Image (tube, rainbow, N blue to C red; front, side, top):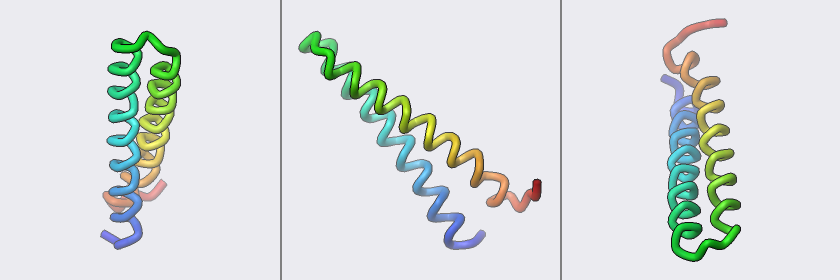
Length: 68
């Protein structure tokens, strides 16, 4: 496995984990304060999770050695 592919793989996982954390923080913030800022955090977190998943889907075949 190439080093750059490994780094991209780790980067995708970190983006997804950060997105999940933002979703959780937004949900908690909205539940406690009933403020709209919680929805912004949840939307941003969801976008990061989707972006990380897309990046992972592009990197995973390279890590397995598949060619498309």
